[in-house]
Length: 457
Ligand code: SF4
Image (cartoon, rainbow, N blue to C red):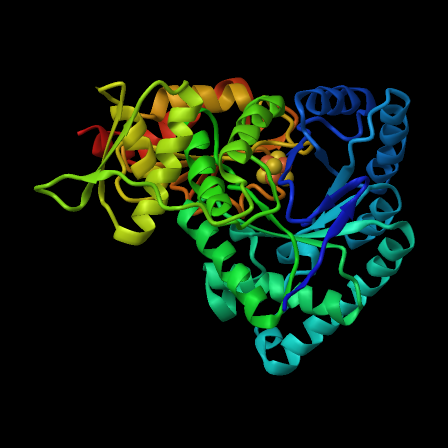
């Protein structure tokens, strides 16, 4: 018998094995109460059930209280989540006002100070340090009925986890388990766990691992699913459908976010479609399609009379599920008898099977972003999509963006108001470029590094 925990977030209960909850995040400055309020209202009206806001300072933490009151005055009780990085003190303030706080185990504790920190004594002392910091947070959360999301990101595992497990799904699992164990010792169970990655197979593997680990240990906490830095347009939707949809079809996941580098409101209808189709709270039967008779690595998916999103979602999830079992390497998708080349190529690329265009990693942006990332990503894609095999990260801020570039060849990262830094790998190669000139500069630097000729040939 599994000890199954639920997390109360305002009036919403996550993990009750009934509904899967839709979440999103504002991309406004939490310091700007009015713009944040307007966006939360839009999200709530679109059907978003929980909204997260970045929370960088104690002042922003206090703004949550004001925003909650203003929302309540409009008859909107959508629970708010404070997104915390690096600042345990801010987490403690946010826990007074938010319904949930999200902490990232990769950056909740400080960086290692020396190699000796990886000795047994060093690791024990770091664990004690984490426990001490979480103890005071837990006291506040218990008093205020605030829940906590342990939000592990593949791109920001702690150096300690990287040292022990590498940049792997196992490292993500262990990072979450370390915090879960501490919270359990502190008798705090209002937890939601997320293991997110921009690489779809890593995200699905990590979530299957924790699902299995829960059964092995005899307890379970609700899981929040999402693909990070998925980017925009068809690529982002295919990645999210493949990752989130295939897990929901296995009855894994209690809440989801489809991250898009677009207006956050656009995330909601797509997330709802995924839930309507796959969140049936039982393991769905495997879909049946035909293999190519002469090439058993090729799968043919035939559909009729679906709208654009339904076709994209069905093909992405069906292929992902069947690929997991039979390791198909080739795909053809037909809709009403017509071949859908671009969709098939995008699915194969999302799963890392075959690359047919440049790969983009882009964060959905948040209050830390100080340039128009949605427009900039569009421009970067227009100028570089044809560079097959090149991976470009477009990230909203240098605080988290650099760590989460997922091994990109080039990084285009917000560095302050209207400014962009450009990276080759993790090496800074151009600093504080005006945002309006930065895409041209990126293209110039890609060319200078020989990538454009190499890739265009
Ligand atoms: S990388 Fe993007 S989403 Fe993450 S904190 Fe920075 S701006 Fe926000």
